[in-house]
Image 1 (cartoon, chains in turn cyan, green):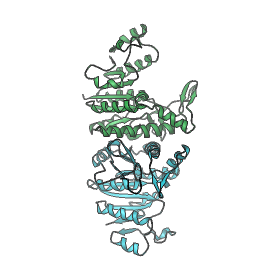
Image 2 (cartoon, rainbow over the protein chains, first blue to last red):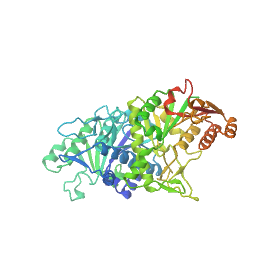
Image 3 (tube, chains in turn yellow, green):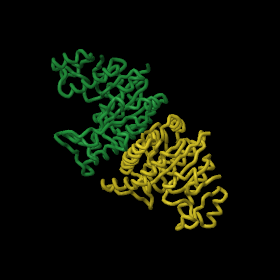
Image 4 (tube, rainbow over the protein chains, first blue to last red):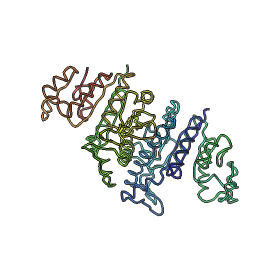
Length: 262
Length: 262
């Protein structure tokens, strides 16, 4: 089976042009098949305030109303995605920028209205990802760069969490590839002591997860992150990595961040 | 040789949601390989004014400064392109939206600064269009939907005339396909009497072009339009059509607008 790396970057890389430049160089240099998934960053919020549209919150949750959807479609799908692709092309990576609507790559379901109406937010399921389209692109040396916009197959674009997209893509592509999923975030990985980079936990097996929770090594926002990662592994992803974008070149040498395996 | 139809639509279709819906239905129904190229419309100008950015003009020419480039990248590449693709997907057309940077589909050269500095505007040449990438997509039943944003191969996105993109794509694809190029605009085609739709000139051969100019049948803005069309024909395009979007379904039955041939 061919290897495929799915990498997700977020605002901490996107909002910093030097970091982004270096990351895109490293991404280009990474051998083998790969897919990039990017989140939003500050630009959408900034454009919103320039237009007098403030982020909508209900019970502390962010809501995607129709105006916010317009903005993220412009910023994620247009401004960020196209500039990132143009930069990758200049570095010799034959990137192709996609929303979930393009080639029906990711079809989502609008989140049902419960206690909270999240608005135009899309949730994913097992059949959301078009393995066929991504496979056609990869086989023809086109590198997919996915933004966090999906569609419902019935004309509606939807705002979708980029972490979730990366995970769904990795799981779906596991049918055809040996996949690894890389989350770049602001920290070096899972740390025994959050203030000490040397306390990095280099590897976590699924069976260790509960122990680490009991010990308090994994806590707070890291719990759902790791839970979702192990869920992806259970569904076929070979390994999930969580670490700092600037250490990506180390992934096949000394390892990258915290490696989660079965 | 397989037939390929390249269709360009502009603001008069894009700005009218009912017209756009009908056009996208007709585009979906059109048999055979096809590529859609779309221009901008009013939305970019409206977003600009909401942000307090007025269209920049020098000597009556529109200039693409860096702020305008940001706006057209968001509106053409994001808002319009992604919504159009989502609508096509809902109608059963496996559309894939692209800027020129995506898959390096259209690489342009920033227009040299002469008497006027047009800013971030891209001009095309013979090697601008990646026939290979478009061919890969078409052969895999993906229908390219191109917005009027290109790149220079060195990280810079550029604003490029959609008519020019459509023509360059048709010329380049003529190496592999029997191409026809369809321009949808607000009129029924070339009219002997501009106020009388029944005076449509159904066909113009290259040799007739001068005569029609001498007779005054072709005048004003129509002269460069037809000149460019015949130039595309000289470079390998089989036929160019100029007509009204809502008559597209007639193209293989009673003909569409004015048909220009060698």
